[in-house]
Image 1 (spheres, rainbow over the protein chains, first blue to last red):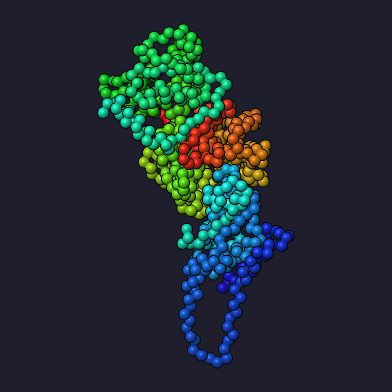
Image 2 (spheres, chains in turn green, yellow; image 1 turned 135 degrees about the vertical axis):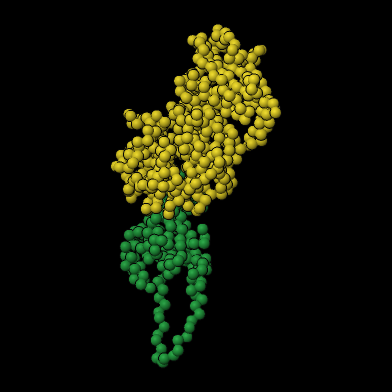
Length: 185
Length: 423
């Protein structure tokens, strides 16, 4: 719980990691996930014996249910990048924040971040470009309170394309980061 | 089993795997090719292919020779025959190769080869090569190397090996084959990508990057016994292995300290030392043949360019200046030239940089070239390119004149690496 304060401080420096964007994001953009605002229950007036709680939510949090729930933003695991760009676009801010929160609240959770590049140019240099993309997201997650030891950022270069046509429409899908949680890799 | 029968058996086996082999097509040849006559060898008529045919094909493929049609001679000429130079001169031959396959009293065989300069009417030399039953093709390549060296003064590369990766469906195969693409063997098969194979200087091991663990890891693979060892599996990405010329060190690109930076270590991963310190991508290290320098790709100047630093680290100096994308440095075996990939408009092509006078020459006319690799004699450069949407290997002479294409019927071929001379 003491780490709760950190993300608030870090959020200001995080701004630098996201692309500066003067235009309004597209309408389809989901609102950023709000920090958990559930307030503590109001104290009762009369003294009563403490009733023990059976907490099933902790089980679902430790497990991967929310990570796979299609209605949960945590099921979204891909971040796409512009050509020759490595900063996180504003539309992915909410997604990155949600994953940071999950990692923060589940300190035993581990993430493998795989950066990818499009097929143009040298395979090994493209490993470098993919690494730059996964390192960027790892840095953002850490600024938002995830621990360095939770996240391994790696690169698959151009070797794992989502789309194999030789055109920009396809290349845009291949310039991406994939987030995998422990148990998924 | 008689030698002849063994060979027929071998021919059958070779034919059965022929679907997987690389086929060579010569798409360009040298301007002045030396006309050469290679006569059928005495005693080789049961061989498939005959040694003389292997020699002929190898010499043709170098782009430096034009093989003349030879009438069938009775009896066949051998190294012991007396040569009527005037007759061969009349057939327009500048050089003549004759020989024989001889059964020795101890039950072994040897191939004898003789090379003559027809113009000077003189014998250039002769050699006897032990011919084990399982190695007729290898003997043919050795004989071709001998002929090539006698005629050009340079070592031949016909008996060297190449390595490359074939992608067939969802499987990746790391293969080795003779320099003519035949005799392919799969040394590693995986459902995950394999990139950047590179030969140890002794030709016995390959270092490469495999993605079998959902991330790039560098392995060293001993070819004879298929033993694989992890050379670099640090946190983050591990890629771009390069052997030092003495085989004692492996330069690699690691992201363990953030970014992609060049490190050096022993091939077993011990004694790790960081060589570059930048906020940029530093990758694709390659040692100069004298071991003094490491060439590498870096985008520290804003675009990827080639730099060079002392092999023990230190301030890099920039090597390429023309263009906004120059990657994959490969120093020539004599250290005088640097091959690399340059982006020219939107084409990726092989460029050669003369390190003394800084002249740059683009030597390919394809547009998606990758991974240039010098033959150990420096004459040819093997590369990967894409023709009609399919990955193929191509070879081009260092002067850009001789061009060949190596294709395989099913699958994409990429990531070629030409192996060293084998003694």
